[in-house]
Amino acid sequence: MPNIAMSRFNQQTLETLRSRADLVEIVGEHVRLRRSGRNYLGLCPFHDERTASFTVSPERGFFHCFGCGAGGTVFDFLMRTEGVAFPEAVRLLAGRYGVALIETAPAATREDTAREAIYRVGEFAREFFARLLWESQEGKAARDYLLKRAITEKTAKECKLGFAPAGSAALTAAARKKGLLEAAAKAGLVRPDGADGLRDMFRARLMFPIHDAQGRVIAFGGRSLDDSAPKYLNSPESPVFSKGRTLFGLDQARRAIVATDRAIVVEGYIDALALWQGGFRETVATLGTALTVEHLRTLGRHTRNVLACFDGDDAGRAASLRALPIFLGAGMLGRAVFLPNGFDPDKLVAEQGAAAFASLLDCADLLIHYFVKNEAAKARGSVEGRAGAARRVAEMLRKVRDPFEFDLLARQAAEMLAVDEQLLRRQGDPGAAAVRVSAPGPATTRITDAAELARIGLLAAALAHPELRSEIAAGLAPDDAQESDLNAIITEICQTQITDAECHALLSTQLSAAQQSHISLLMVGPRKGEPQVGDLQTARRMIADFHQTLKRMRHRRRIDQAPRLAKELQTQGDQARADQAAQDLIAFRRANEPQ
Image (cartoon, rainbow, N blue to C red; front, side):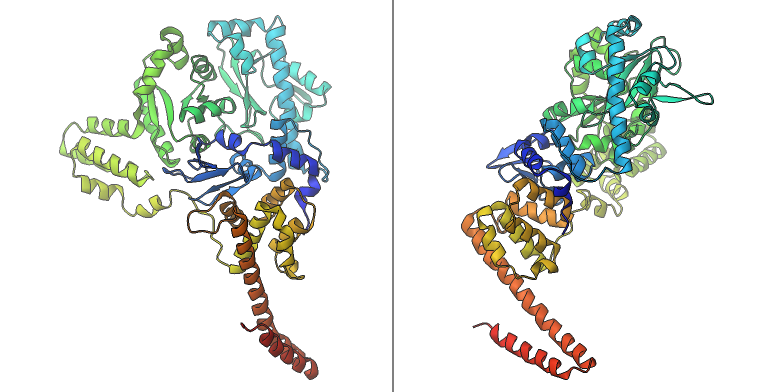
């Protein structure tokens, strides 16, 4: 079996990464964890749940969710949360922990190369814009604007703000000199100007670099300094950037989001910076688009408590009602923070202080509560009005996934609308029970094949107890490796000088999701009544049982194949060998009969 993971990365690199990577720390950036004995528990970031079933074992280096079955190593966690393949997960860890990455595989794919080029030119442009903001005379206009908006130099530098000069091709010329012009065009930093020319996309603007979750520059937002249209200009979408999925500041805010178990969403870059300065580090901003389900699903990896800021006027309140189905579509209720008329978050904090904004957060109402209140107010007590309001509320209740939330909301809505609660429940929940049952997300396929379960058990024992690997290998038949990729992996782990990191790489690249789930279940520490590989004596008994299971399967396979072999020999006219095969089968059965 070819080992792609090991051939791509230097073995020592992988082992250094495994030893330095702190699984609890990395998971803790997405999940609020609490210690429970040797392990840590939290709400699963991969499906909706109210009771913590997501378990992290720092001792074994595995995570497992007992709800949806997601499981694996630190590599698998990054692959899932960041949506990357194994090589990119390795690179992310290497960058995080300062490990020099040595790759020995063939050249990267064209797509990988294009993405890396966009990351490189993004970082180059960020540095280019930052130098002009702080070191050029032309950048004084942007510095004055920041002063006017009460954004401190410390905040601006922490967020790596910059300035795009008014000249038509300043960045174009710099990128050409560095050999990055093609990448700059793909990233949308330069664009065609006439027949053969190119010009800068951003000119005379305060620049806000937009980062992905790993802190890499993937796009820019530019704010005009004289309020000329468009006031805000964003990079076009690219292979690494989508406005509908990206949130400004999430790379810096996610630790605070996990720590506070909430996220505040605003519309503008300056609003986000002002709230950060005011102590609300859990703030992110959309990029000139309305909030999307994808935005909320991204935030949902870190918290289910999302507060969205809206203007307090009629337009802002209407926008909050449009946002409700988006929240429900992402499996969240969401809360609305209505700002006083004439204020945005930045102005509110500047003029009335952080305490004023904090008080708005404290009284933020659930969006669906506001929706029901609004419907009740519009009904004005008439029969027709209340019936219409009840129908619209029932339609919205159908989108609520959690059965407990549905129960509470239906009860409250019926009281506010003065309609029969059971009728509202029936209208709000026709056939939706199945949807709510499935709300936790698709569980990993359960493995039922006895031989595969035995092989996974042997693999888990080999990972948990390296001292038992020779014992595990001794119980395998010589031809087992040809019967299953799992057997080949077990053989490689048990009969070679493979490091723990290389073992994890094998699991991440060679196992199915169902196999990874069962491995992580055994490694994290199964629930009561399930097999446990942590204890050495128990592991030895399990190994013996698994060996016996595989032996029975081999015997059954040989017995099942014998008649077919005899028939084939007879068809070929070789009666002597057919008779011999029959005699061999009889002898084999006698030799393996239970004593």
